[in-house]
Length: 482
Image (cartoon, rainbow, N blue to C red; front, side, top):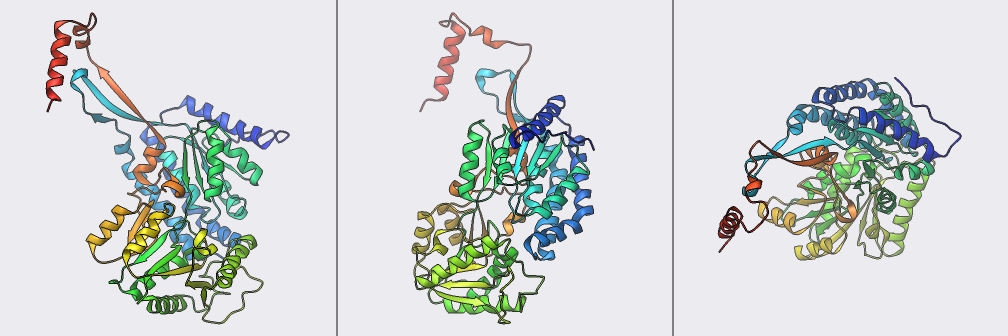
């Protein structure tokens, strides 16, 4: 593959700008790739993921000090392959110009919407899912006919190296370029005049990214997270809810932007929920320290932050239930047992900050109005999970609360559905990708009016006080009258 030569004597911004310029020039030479070209790129990516899957799984685990290979396969590798397959299947249909309604004043003509590639898409990848959260927006960008520059996370360096090798083996750098480096490089990356910028990460950093992008009027897609609630109606089995939540919360040891961040449980069911959650979790992870199925915390900084959250909660009166069935000592590792936090209060960090780890506060309620008031008063989360077999109540909650996405009677699985958009709202982000919404997000919807040989406009043209103009105005006012 042809590589773009970088002058390393200059700043990160200058070096990155060279790559961007080369990609923009290449895009200008082929601004509208046809469906066959786009599908060919998606096929190459599909086969590359299959060829590199073992290396990717091993690299992610090394970056975490241990990441469950089954989780990486399920949530990163298979999810990416499914996204590629879905885009390949539907791409030709999405690319077709859409015929739209022709207003009376424009007849005879054709009105349509055409979808054009934007150009070069910048993608900033977080450390928690360094494969899927790089490939998923890339799939949408390629399907829409764009080129892409990907900034991988410095906190997942081994995965970054494999991603760079994998993508470099199938794409020229003027098609897809992988950028590695520290926070200085990340900062320079977000200041580039991309045609669209995708960022996944913390809300605080997302604000800085948006500020940098604004200097170039670069549109952004921000996937930011927040505190995603799980709500259990008192008519629903607390034991069943605990079983389903334990599965979602354990994925990546809670280091997921859509992980359940706290649970609302009716006061009469709290004891049953906690016992069931502990029992299910212990049965799935009878030990954790040397258990390859249980993922470690990404680094010491994140581990210390989570330990501070627990200490803060305990100091302020919360009851901690540590689920450690083998009574293991985790010193010298980055493994952290799942911990339920009972009687949390709003002055505790666990209810103020996104947790992003194996900690689950349990808040009691007596009436559902308390729950909806609490959720509506807070910042809008990336996800909301509601457990209730009553469809009417479930629909009412969906209608009266805002979140990026939602699940009824489960958690997190909506991210795996390619036919629905994934994205935040308010403080949890903006924009969407996955499936058709990804294609639309990375496309310019251009409205077009096509006129034929007949020019009726000339019949009503100035001088305006003519018979045809007056008849047209009179007719249209009659159409809109009471």
